[in-house]
Amino acid sequence: MYHAPTPPSYYTIDWEDEGYQKRHAGLMIAHGIFMCLAFFFSIPVGIALRSVKHPLHAMATVSFYAFCALGCAASGLYKKLTPNMYEGAVHSKQGYLIILVAISLSALDIYAFLRRVITFFRSTDRTPKAFWRYVVKKETLLAAGPEYSGIVTDEPEEFNSSKLPRESVELEHIPLTESAEGDLNHSQTEQWANTLHQHRRHFSTVSEGTLFSPHSQETLDIIKSGRGPLLHRIGQGAFAVVERSLVLAGFAQLLVGIVTYTGGCRQNYINGCLAHLIKGAIFWSYGLLTFARYLGSFADLGWSWNRSPLGNTYTAEFVESFVIFFYGATNMWMERFGAKAGDPFTTKQIQHIGIAVMFCFAGLVGMGIESRRIRKWLASSTFASLTHPRDMPQEAIEEPISYMGSFNPFPALVIGVTGAAMAAHAQTYLFQVQIHELWGNLLVAFSVLRCLTYFFLWLGPSRSILPSRPPTEALGSFFLACGGLVFMFSTEEVTIAAMRRGRDDVMMFLNVAVALTCLAFCWTLAVVGFKGWIKSRTHSSVTYRNPA
Image (cartoon, rainbow, N blue to C red; front, side):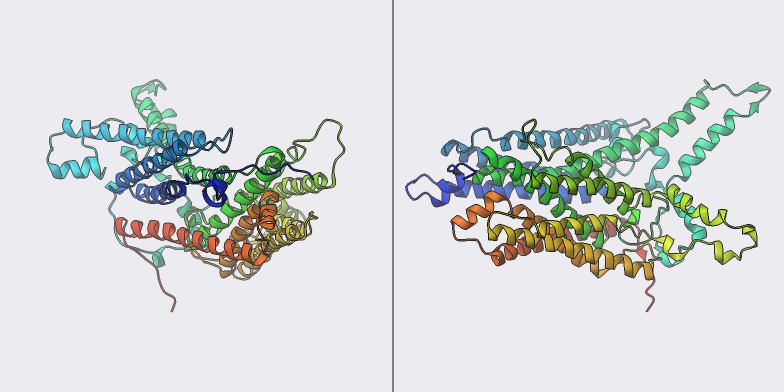
């Protein structure tokens, strides 16, 4: 009644068309396996190896390009042997663009490698052992002078941590009291701060009766020494963001590839299809990221429900609130896509716009709660009401223990309300209603479990810098990821195809989603565990006290 018949696709001629004899589904299966190995195995392993400057990082990079070459060869051969079943497909173009981005990152590594080789041959020690140490392992460069590799992996000379003695450090010797928070906060920037302090001191002193010239070589050296670490951090951060984005780009390509192979998202299906896939993929990725936080990722920022060893940083709740705000601010204006000027607002448009408005302003509230400045403003009203605040006992004006953590319920509130609304979303067919109810209830379950996490941590905030691993987050992340996957399955085109083929079974959809989520969680555990293992083998021995 509302859509044209779905035309044949690569999937139908490979698996369902009895009269079509030239089938090459094996090549497409090989393409999918090789590309998944490239983006979901080689890149995560390479990121973990790069984080500790391990010499085997080059092997991970080589394996990435080898898998890409095999995957592209299988895809190219498949396209030569199969008629074009999807006009205007962009999967191949986007894939080659992503590979080009990866090549540009590798070009920086190759350039840095060549610079180290040149420096090695200019040095006096040209033994094979020195080549392994200085070129492959990148321990120390013999010749002076800046190197472009510092933007990628190496640290500047004045901040080279390899020159510092590495001894076994016991966490029980690290004071975790409020008075020590400043020491932890300044541990990483102490040398740079000293350099800038020296610059200010020289600028304001008189040396031998002559004012210190701002254009002198000493001043320029001090300024350059400060700019060097800043540029290094900016370049290193940008490189890390782009490299990690390749994994997300690979996941996006996986979804686009599935759509292209099955022939979906065409004609007037496209808007609903994109909405379900994009939003479902966001919840799916958010669930995997939350599980990684549970395992200990981002513990250095205090995002693993632990106390941050770095002191004042952006909280995970602030980042969640910002993403929610950004999503709502953009989607408020996108729900009318496809409508003509002057068309009245439909019930579904009002529903979706209302959800987007909730995301926008609830995200703003969440960011406001996480703002330390706003927190101080809110607390100042208490002191303003006191006539003699200094007469109060010390424990009465100290920060309560709950201030050690972030207990922001608004991200969970937004996701929970979204799930409850989608569970009651009107649909044309009963099966579609059941699928929406399924993933809506999964999102509600995440919201409830996240609130339980805050409740228990509010009763006993974490005092340790180690990940606290609340079990409610392990369950909540699973429900969130599984809900996002069922969200993608609830696309109208998929549900109609399931009904036509007699596969309209909610239990089957749920079991498939649970199985894929368990597989993805196993992959996440392997990646995070491998990164922790490789760091334990290359960094100084760190132990912690067992209270038992």
